Amino acid sequence: MADLGFVRNESARQLRAGRSRTLGLVVLDVANPFFTDVARGAEAVAEAKGIVVTLYNSGSDPEREHRHLELLTEQRVQGVLITPVESGARDLDDLAARGIPTVLVDRGSGRRKQCSVAVDDVLGGKLAIEHLVDRGHTQVAYVGGPAHLGQVRDRLQGAREAWAAADLPADALTWIETSALTVAEGREAGARLAGIPTSRRPAAAFCANDLVALGLLQHAISSGVRVPQDLSIVGYDDIEFAAAAAVPLTSVRQPRQLLGRTAAELVLDEATNAAHTHRQVLFTPELVARASTQG
Ligand code: RIB
Image 1 (tube, rainbow, N blue to C red):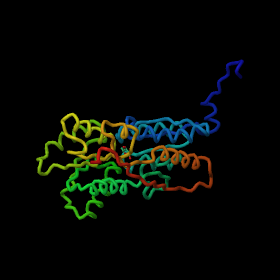
Image 2: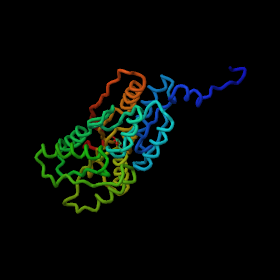
Image 3: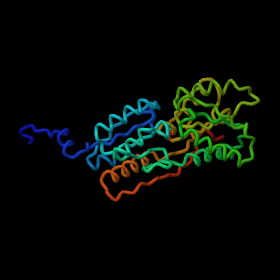
Image 4: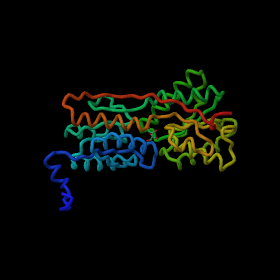
């Protein structure tokens, strides 16, 4: 084969085998290191079995997600790992109907007969708020959005439950809703926070993910707001840049690579094991305290 320079025809092999040696991984935001780490975990499992992981970015756009899933269906992939833009994505039913193994990542499967791997985001929100309340904060902002993201809603639910458990007035936990979970939106939220009259301005912020927290931190530093003295900040994910930030970021850690590994194991089991049974795996987050709240 080497002497002849023979290269196997993957299309012909796929026709015979009925499936390509590929997993599709559809993520909300390819620029978010959270998903890079999830992809690394999935790749580690898939590549050990000779399977390639192909990354698709929905950009939190349902129409782009739909186009990606149509392509993946045509390509007869071994399976699909997806963090759906909306939990009721019509395409998820289509994939199941076409017999394409699908695992929801970073989202519970609800009533669906599908596997899912996620982290308990309600508990994560509680951990963040309990940390701030323990440090004496009585005026806190929850910074994140949009509301259609399940992660944003669940983290806010946990925050509100912990706030109520501390007998603090509901209106002292304010939600600064953003249009995306990005650094730019974090900076913009910082400007909105600065515009709140001093008497009512929160001295602490729980951000729905680390990118928003890093943007908020950048705005604070550039406008002379001291962190944590004037503004304590908690993020979510504990991506690599959280610890490396100008003021190391307190964050709620998600087991990112483990999410990816587990999702890949489940989808490949469904693709190859006739006795496969669906599982909904839920991991526990942990709070990692750093300089952005210590003081
Ligand atoms: O996709 C937005 C966020 O949801 C990520 O930062 C991560 O927290 C995920 O759970």
